[in-house]
Length: 159
Image (cartoon, rainbow, N blue to C red; front, side, top):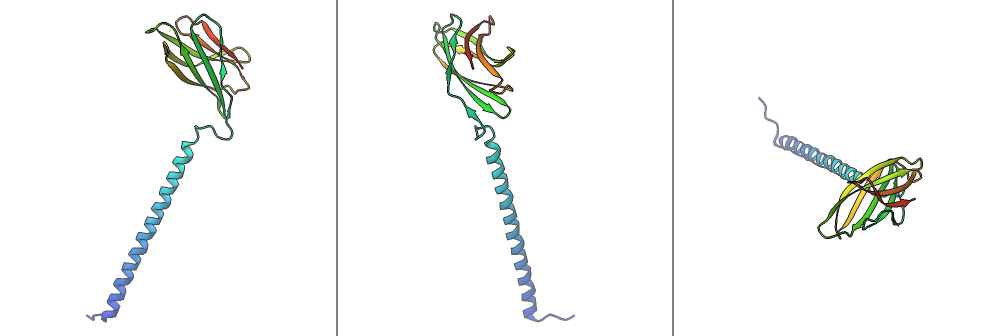
């Protein structure tokens, strides 16, 4: 059995170490690229719900009083690619301790009504309510706030 010269053994070991380093560095670089890709995907997917350049946000509008309920509200409509988001700020100023149930209803141009949100109003506590509808802002004729116990409309907003 012949023994290789000392320089050849060192060369082989050095080549193996250099190859292992290259493999480790390549693996770390690939892992970094995958991590950046995942981070970019999270950032992009996190923005899909926010109003982008295609979203049109209308100025807040005040509902008109229809019934005698001591309630007032404003609505902001946000045009989305899938329909309309409606954000309502509502205050019920009835007797302390009294809780009333309300429903936000969207009305289309043909007069069809669609409930899009509901909440419990507590006296003198501002409620921020959001609802969505598949109706576009062009199809949306108005919004109503309705008492859940009687079905009676108490506020109306024509758009």
